[in-house]
Image 1: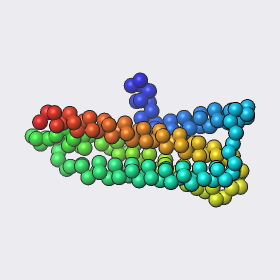
Image 2: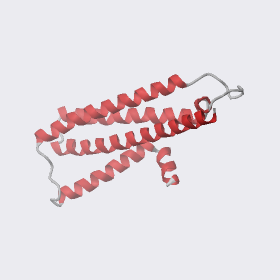
Image 3: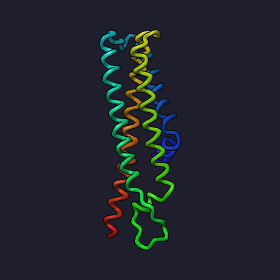
Image 4: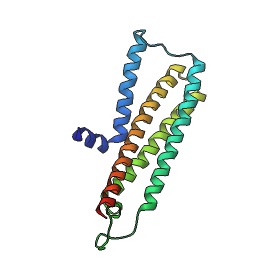
Length: 166
């Protein structure tokens, strides 16, 4: 499991979209074989509005988390005698990796939001494409929030471990 997570965190955005496109292939197969039915246009337009709202809200939460994480960063160097684990984290390469993962997650959410939003109003490709993009958006949304929660959980564990030492 650790290998899978390591690979996932090495290419998180690519993996999010690969999982999303795999889900789209499954949905497309189900639609073609009459297992699923594409909803009516009005429903799809409502789903698009709701999905973009949720995507932008999640991007805001992750941005808030990133902002809080940045405010915790201190300027202490590791040679200081009383350095906490959190300060050590903030001065390590893990901090840069964490902030990069969160920033790229926000960019990914905004990208898929823009795609859905544009397709909602410029419906030149057919309503089915908007439906598939909504499914892709939900997959990206779920994976991004799971990744952000995983990061948050690890930071909290790190912070809790720091309090146990003192």
